[in-house]
Image 1 (cartoon, rainbow, N blue to C red):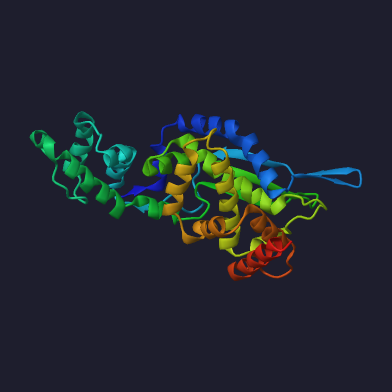
Image 2 (cartoon, rainbow, N blue to C red):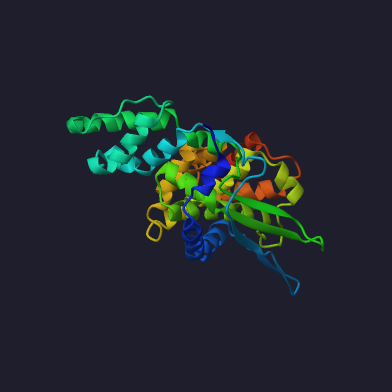
Length: 315
């Protein structure tokens, strides 16, 4: 019997909300400080004696994306969820046979996976079985379906203008989806929360952060930017944050990479930038993109990046 996304979210441990909020409180200031330092953009600006401030709040929400709550999954997703939770142990061949029995029973009752359960007497073959289970996870991976339903399924940076015509922004962290996806990825809820928080705040800084002269990325033009550029910048600065703060959040970068491998191609745009450019190259290209009157395509941003690299090499 098919299972809806709403049903899967109802099965997420309710304590997940508390864990996500704890991770948000722990990392929020650190994320903002590093993003401000690496982008050299700020949410406040002294404009001829008057302080202009952008308040970008972070709000937790269970996460039932609009029009997606009734998306259906095959009932074998429950087995896949159980397998995903022990994926690291499966990979290490370290899962205790006693802990495997509940999964073994679920396999016996599941018709879509069609894997014959091993008898307890065949314990010596458990490592081969673990390889088979990992192959099941890879070929029937429900994360592909979940992550490609909607780009902002884990979190969202929302922006617009208020009653007074002022730019406003807000970050939403969808704790229910984070709980579900963290199980499927085999990572800690806290680590995935930090990844999502850094990514969404990076969107906010690249968009609404003030330059030294008060310039921001005009919302109408920011909205029209190629998705690979917007996501590439958010991913790039998230990458910088996670690699700079591995002492504080040692497993968050691993969660970032595991998630990236399952996401759409636009979430890997930054990989080439990390390899071929310095942070100052990327920052300079970003500033040019913010001031461009034309639509910034991926090709146009690459040209800006090449120009920045050349200019700074001879500067």
